[in-house]
Length: 437
Image: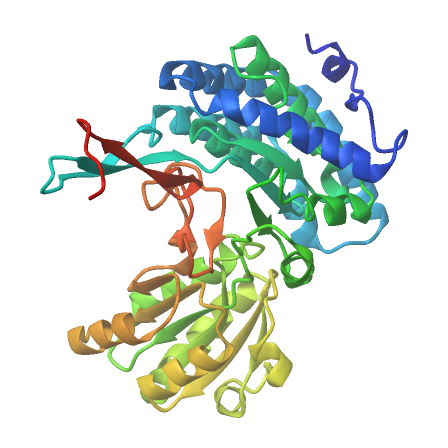
């Protein structure tokens, strides 16, 4: 079944966009997904779960072939001189493939939301009116860099009864194609409808533009990537979009924070994996503790290779750091770079967050209960933390299993999107001959 993977060749689906008009190519893929979605919507949980488990097993078994496919993408990325953060996001290792497989098994173990009756009430005329969770239909995912998104997105969409149309970045095309091949072949062999995982393997940007026009075939678009991708998708899509926008995340260290705790949290938020959307990009520190906290904190960052860009007050305390400018407060670095600002109080910190934040993940480190409560109430973000790292804004950490992304939208879903967020509802009405008078 997987001869192409074992031979190290990435098999491209037929017909490809290179051999036919791009619009027809994308429409054909989405049309097959639409047909598959109707069948997938009524599949039992046991069939979906068994398929996901077999997919996980085969991903693990195909580790050498997946790494080989990934090496082609890495070679091209390095040749183009892209950043170390980009290379990190793109790299597939045995550990990361194992994590992908574990993610599929975790999704299989989660309760199936499809068919859940949310509410049922009896009206005065005896008619029962309820709401039940149902799949959204066909979900289009437009994403960059990380090949693990391919497996995460497919598993969550399938478990929630949705077909999926995947369009990853050209920088990961070999990796994504290899992963999709495993998932698709195992899925069909396990009873999932053919075409329920569609992959656009044409790197031409026009394929995305055509995808965004297919409002008759695709029900929802979820973009995952940088600011440029988000802008392009939202400006051109005829299909509803749930944005997974940039993560311009802040941590505010309050005047009475436990400084040892603050140091550990801030270090984790920046250094543990800087190329993620929930990594801290700006550190805000109360002026009363800045002279005690910042020298040691900055030294720890610099040992880890973090470049610090500070405000004038920060540079007065640690003169060696670079000067921050206005652009630094608005930049999602996704790298070992950190902007640092000393503030006079929590009000100034919250004003800074309101002005520059992306409503993603914001944190306060404090032992003051009243200020913690105020920060939770007044800071506008999809996740607000007290005494915890912003890196914890994650579907797995929140108990959702794998996530399809972190929504910064306000409509339908906000925060990590798990299975429930990939469903909608319909009304069901049970009558006994009732008529409208």
